[in-house]
Structures are given as C-alpha cells and as structure tokens.
Image (cartoon, rainbow over all chains, first blue to last red; front, top):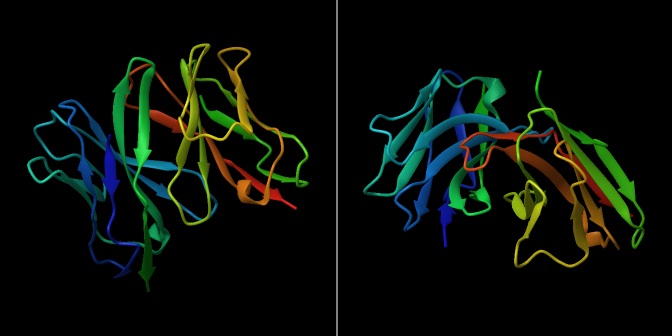
Length: 116
Length: 112
C-alpha cells in the first residue's frame, strides 16, 4: 500500500522569499509518479509539477521545482520568490499503476500563507 | 479548450434526499474518477471508471453510486445524504496509465 506524508500542516513565508514544502512517500513499486497540486480556497485542483521515478533530473516549472531524493523517498516542492497569490493549500500526490488504469493518492496537504 | 466540467458548482440538498452530481469531459479520456474532499482533508478516491468498467474503493459507503453512460459523462449518486456527506466532490480524468490528470472545479455539497 502506498502512503504519502506531508508533515507540515501550515507554513508561513514572507513575500519574495523561497519556501520548501515537504513530502515523503512509501512504495514498493519501481515505477511511480509524484505530483504537486495547488488548491486555492475556491476548490479547484491546479497541477503544478510532476516527477517520474525514472527521471534523472529534478523537475522544474517556472518558480516551482521539485527536490527529488529517491533514496530518502522524498519529493519536496520548492517555491521561489513567493507571491501573495501563492497562498493556498498544497497537496503532494502519488500515482500508482493498476490493471484498471492509474490512481492518484494524496497527502494531507500543507496550508501555505504568504505574508506581505 | 478541452476540459472537465462539473455541475452544479454548489449543491444544497436535504438530509436523506437523493442527489446527483454530474461531470463531463471533452478530453476523450478513458478513465474518470470521483474524489470526496471534506474540509481541511486530503481528497479521498471513491471510485473510478476505466471505460465502462467500474472500480469501487473498498471503504466507499454503499450510499454512494456512480454511472457512466458514455465516455463523456459520469454521475455521482448519493442515495440518502447524511450530514457527514457534506464535502467538495472532485471529478478527474486521465488516459489509461497516463501521468496527466485533469480535474474539474468541483461541486461543493451542503446537506441541511
């Protein structure tokens, strides 16, 4: 069974500073994928970044980067130059492959607040 | 733009009165998912369809059912909503074994 752990229920960061949101995972599958999503108070789930288990380099998407440490089973999200609009809930998620397709399992989330 | 659309955005239903939430997609993805997300919690997978094959999670209550009449539409039926069923319900789609998931904007269900 897979497990995703986000140990930071809430994080605070000053505008324009960088912040790291932690995520650890547990799986025995050699092939898996890790995602980060942003969920503002309106509720929609916004895809941020993806890292495949066989990817050699850490994923980057604009101000978002994923610090992937496979041996430690961690996939931390780094947001550089935080903006007020980054205040939201952030979820780490893992994809598992099944015969019926693939499914996404989420961590408990981290509420990020960006202070002016 | 190809997308996943959930209707309605907000739904208020009475305790015990059946309610149906809908999801449609223009992506032609063969997998559709329903997640339940209670306040300040992680989304929890209720069930998913791979084409017409229905896959129920072991801990999904019998009160929750789903229908997928065609590729584009999927419905979530709650037969007798209780106060504990108040939540955001998220629909998502993906290709079989694809790594991309597209989420709808969700339906926020209130039970009174």
